[in-house]
Length: 493
Image 1 (cartoon, rainbow, N blue to C red):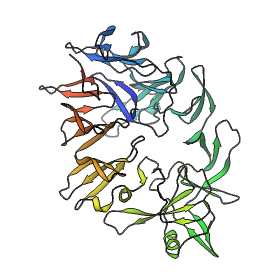
Image 2 (image 1 turned 180 degrees about the vertical axis):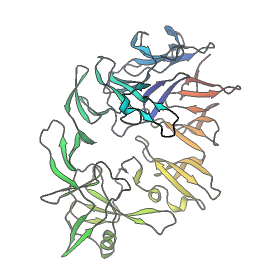
Image 3 (image 1 turned 60 degrees about the horizontal axis):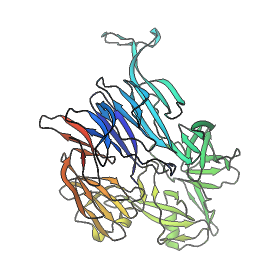
Image 4 (image 1 turned 90 degrees about the horizontal axis):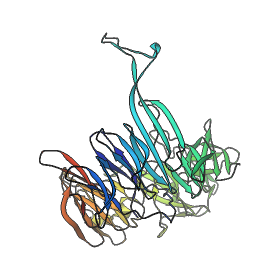
């Protein structure tokens, strides 16, 4: 399975299929989805036609100036000579009319969601005019965005608003909760016959296992799907945590401090019982007493500045930041729900991410031990995506301040792709297909890591996981078309 969800974009100058990494909450698409062998093919006249992927025989008769892949639900975005875009079905029928709007589409739970948006200048009333104190004139207009979001199949419109530039923004960030529910824009919807019906609103954060958090006046409540009564209510954020060790009360006064206050605090406490629940899933109670620990472990706990809950395990992660190291990093201990402290917890298969998705645990030393580190290496962020198993993208800066990337196998303790590339992009995690860029501003080459071979010999300015590539002509013009990332086959004349 690919690591991306299709998001297509048509602009006045080119038609580019944009991609994004797979969401942590995987999208759910029914197993009876159609296999669509239709692909955009670039002709010598710089038009796109849709052809069969194998035979290259035309399937749709029309020509377009831009064309995206079809979604698993059977829709694509196309563009005309005026720079307008529209959505068509598999037969070429227009289901969303051509317009100057920018269009994006996304498939969640077997439904095709679209967003159309256009920027324009809106005349404002006199009291909202922008008076320039230097006398260069009066600006009587303000930049606005007109946004419409809906469902292609049923023509249901979920949002239709005009919003000022740099104020509210709306995205196609729908998340599947289960096969009958999706979460979007702070609301929970139930799907019935292809239409969405709001069942809950004002949701602050969606959690795993069909749970979510709502807030009111800095008080938080945790709910489960289809349950009207909160599982936990009147929770309040705290940065103070107390835990009993024998007759001593250890009080941590600055836990999980952030430069910017998160929308949901990383520690939530019940007022009456002072029970603590921890980020990211707030799914289990932090123990009120340490039952087993060494003196050295107790000293460590007294310096703890990070407390995370390790999802799908009985453990909490305790971190102490090492300010004195050349490379700033955390040291770790583990505390289970019964109050037992451990230096390590064996082969638990989990990842701990922060609120913006960066990998917190395992850290670099656990993934790439010091004995495999080159002289004077410094490290950037480490990336890991679902279905990569024990493979990690690692950024390195060497003693010459050259920055490169490689793919490290934590289990085998070896480089699957040597850290000698300026950029390494994951195109397909399951089949281990990558795009490798040797030097900055250089071309990307396809690489099959599983079979240790290059795919074709042609380089591209960019390669997307959906096969959209960019090449630059001798005159400096950029051309976009599609390839098969598994064979290197180009879909153009």
